[in-house]
Image 1 (cartoon, rainbow, N blue to C red):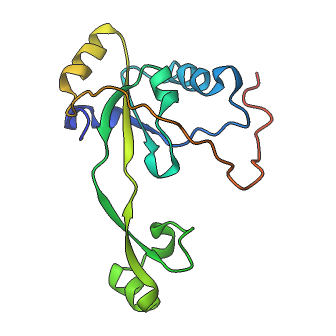
Image 2: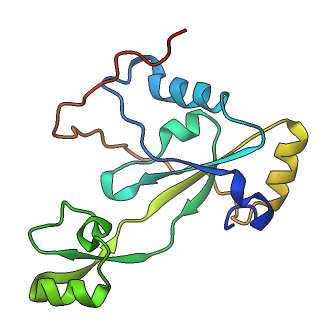
Amino acid sequence: MGICGKEYADKVLELNRVCLMDNTKNQASFLVANSIKLLPKPSIIVSYADTGQGHVGYVYQATNFIYTGLSANRVDWAVKGLEHKHAKTLADGKTLEQIKEQYGDDFYHTQRSRKHRYIYFHGDKRQKKILNSLLKYPVEPYPKGDSVRYDSGKEVRTQGLLFFG
């Protein structure tokens, strides 16, 4: 509802991860742009570039996403020695009080890194105009800076066959 209101909330899709073995010849922006073409119209695609990982969002800039600034400041909780695990994984259905009791002094709060927010309106000319007029975030200039590439630390299992027919 935060992007274009309640009427279009069911049209919002989030692009969660883009991971490539090699980004030669702009493979990431090619993948994103061509994937969007397969989505129903109208669709609102939102994606985030994590400043904590050194990401700026150049893939989204290259595919003409709208930049709407940084996410709000947020605080997460973590457990000493288990920082690699997401809070929801650690919670596993427990209340916050139960988690605090279980982990005691190892439980702590930490500042969440802010994310660059990118939005793309997929639709015909009229649909895009309507969605643009309803956008609840101010449109800002694209951020610039050095984007950090990193190794995931694991061998990435790839899918050998995407489509068959």
